[in-house]
Structure formats: C-alpha cells, structure tokens
Amino acid sequence: MSRFISCALLVAMLLMDAAHAEPLAPGGAAFSRGDYNRAAQLLLPAAERGNSRAQGMIGFMYATGQGLPQSYDAAAYWYRLSAEQGNTTAQYLLGLAYDKGQGVPADDVAAYKWLNLATAHAPKPLRENYAKLRNAVASKMSRGQIEAGQWYALRWPADSPF
Image (tube, helix red, strand yellow):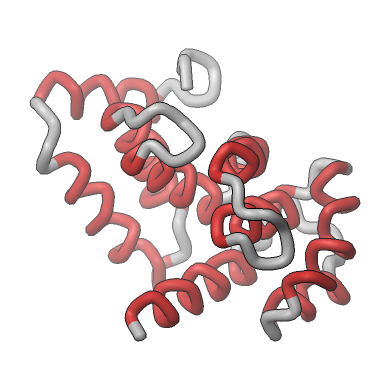
C-alpha cells in the first residue's frame, strides 16, 4: 500500500512540475492514467528534444520499469538532464538516486545538493516533503559534508562535479 502511495505521489509531482514544458497533453494524459507503454511512446521524442518534464517522466518510467525496461542507469541519465534544466521533481529524484546509489555512485554530498536545490525551488505543497528527505540525508553527514553540499547547491550549475 505505501509503495502505491509513494508512486502516486511521484506521478503527481512529475505532472505538477511544469518547468520548461512544451505541450505534453497526450503523453501526460497517458502517464497520469498509468498507461506507461503509451506514455513512453509519446514522451520519449519530447524528452529527446530536451523537454525537462518529459525527461523526468521518462526517468521515472525507467526507474520503476513501467512502460520501459527497468534501468537505474537510464533513470539517472534522464533525471540529470531534467534536473540540470531546473526541474525540481527531477532534482528530488536525482537526489534520491545519489542517496541510494541507484544509477549513480552513492554520494551523500551529491544527494544533499540535489535535494537542497529541489527543496529551495519546490512548489509550496511539496517543499516540506522535500525538506524532510534532505534533512534525513543530512542526519548521516558530517558538518563538513553538509557545508560542501550547500556550497555546491549555491554555486550550481557552474561549479559542481555532479
């Protein structure tokens, strides 16, 4: 039951984040009703053209194996492309990937950086949830690691190795 709720929350977040969005009506509609096979067919061309919202959705489908073969490496690739364009949901999901080492090396500083960026720019209804996860990551970090994560977030995108 909690897995269903967390997947539903992620779907809602992906659909809410409209940064750099081009019209994604058919693909977004298929995604929102859970028709991931159709969504993948419709969203992949938009993602390849650089649409950050489509990239985040494609990343989610790779991460969950819904509509596309499950691949954390591919999910992290698409999350990064979207996150680098400022998509807060993709930043959040990329932070989770770094926290768990899924598709990228486990790295608390990188996780904190991406989660901090997501928290800072998230729509108000999502900010508290993003902050909770960022703070959970911070709880296992040293003061120096937290400072490094903050430094990278403040200087993003120019001075970050991840």
